[in-house]
Image 1 (spheres, rainbow, N blue to C red):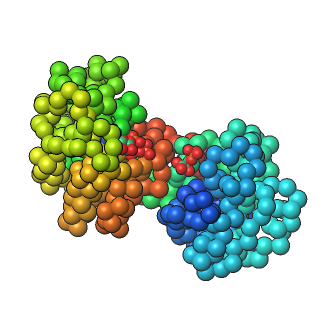
Image 2 (cartoon, rainbow, N blue to C red; image 1 turned 90 degrees about the horizontal axis):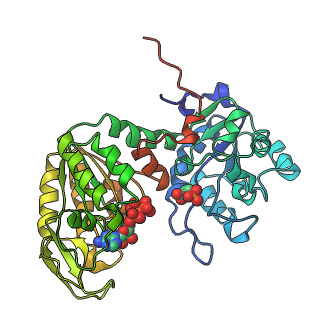
Length: 405
Ligand SMILES: Nc1ncnc2c1ncn2[C@@H]1O[C@H](COP(=O)(O)OP(=O)(O)OP(=O)(O)O)[C@@H](O)[C@H]1O
Ligand SMILES: O=C(O)[C@H](O)COP(=O)(O)O
């Protein structure tokens, strides 16, 4: 069911109103507290700007990291300058997210301004979703906007709990966009629809693969998980990453693909290494000829060609997980080739969706991020959505009002 969107709220609904906005501003910081990737801050801006331009007072909340109690290195203070710069106003910051001091700051907020609350996870009640804590957060505002897609898979006080005390509770623009692509485009894709799934282990992608097998026409598998599939087919895998307890599962996934008429492609050649290291000796071998003592760390050139050809026929592609150990330049070729291929397909009108995690890093490394139709800001959240799970932070929001026919 579609959710009510912040876009439906106009100046009439918003002027002078205090709006509690939950965003996912969980950005990486270096040892000097400098932001090393501001994607999530930029992604939160359209919703905040919409609220400000309609005269609302924005009370902005987020977590950062996984602190246990108040931990200065997880303060949201380092985010204030960038947030202010992107919004074009001076953002105020509170030292806590509840309590009398915060209430005072909220009471003196002018229309069209932003108060950033301190890391909501400094209170253990946040992750426990304690109603009393949610009520205190909610008491700061008149209505709720959830734009924290990256945290929508968590039923926490600031994502789910507050909806019990604030009406309306609506979806922000980012949350909406993520759902449109990761749920909408994937459930109702332009076909042929292909998924590319990589990453390290098959065990962490079982849910995604099973769910995608119900929807896709083509499934391309890469990354460390392929060796479990090879072994299940009786091939030697040398010292490659293998999950011996998942061999039956790999066989059943191959059978399921067959019975569903999904074209499941495994790499036909691999780049192997004599050790797990950036400076390892490497060579390219057919998938059926991995010698003892060698491990597969990337897909080979024939596989890149086969995968690229298969992708040429598609209208929608979703990608989750790298094709190899892309952190080592020597074994990044397969992942980078897929990133470039998707950029090329985007230019031809194919919908290309990058489902979070390491594939986002790969696309950014190759410099083609701006070419993709959609890059998810959520790792765990995008994976859960692709697995077909409901996200508590989304479920709790108001339903969209059906448009009269
Ligand atoms: N052949 C391989 N052998 C061992 N590790 C591999 C291999 N191919 C890829 N990997 C590793 O898999 C890791 C990514 O796997 P993961 O399952 O975490 O992917 P992801 O879904 O993109 O990430 P996230 O879990 O953050 O969403 C990378 O660190 C990469 O080095
Ligand atoms: O980075 C993320 O995936 C989100 O911000 C959620 O963080 P969490 O896994 O600590 O809940």
